[in-house]
Image (cartoon, rainbow, N blue to C red; front, side, top):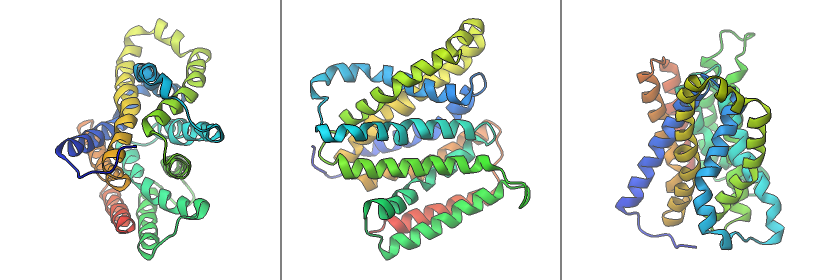
Length: 295
């Protein structure tokens, strides 16, 4: 495993490129949903990511070895780190703007802290406890901003939160059981697990048949899904893992701070409306994340 080293210019370039790519991802999902169903968009995302990584899989085929006792955790990483969040974000964007789902993504570090404490015995310091509480207040502000009344609850706004809980669980599983393995190899194994199920679903759900029947309309969505799968999913995870190796997990996860702002700017260009109260919620979440990460 590469040792942590001083942050260099190429690390900062990696950092900001990842933030921009992931900020655009919510817009790419939105475009995919113009033609395909949420489950199909998620399946395309995972399948395209896998196909895009095949060259790396071939180059690293001899390195695809981990301790036998750890193989059982690979499906968990694939589910909680890839497939489940992909499905939830796609479903959420059928009723929510892409910019809002990008904002909700900023709660990921908070759930990573909380789940680490509850399930993995990670110590919660005073700063982390305050950070989690402040972050939840910010998330609550955003959730309530989408409710028409107390009795008329928009449950779709909760889906991104469940997705970030899944991301938080995935991060803790990875940290607990795969500290000494090459994270790039683990990423390849994750996609290798979920991709066959996704490709099968695309076939039996009629997604490929739809492309044949409506090639022009389908391509208008598929070109965004190709960008999402190749850059926003497959290689983004690889370069994110490289960033963790070269710097630190804390520095790499700070991409979460930039992603919401990118998604907001992209949403505004796409004529989405951002409520001031939602920006207040984002600001409160980022304060919580900052406080919680100070340790």
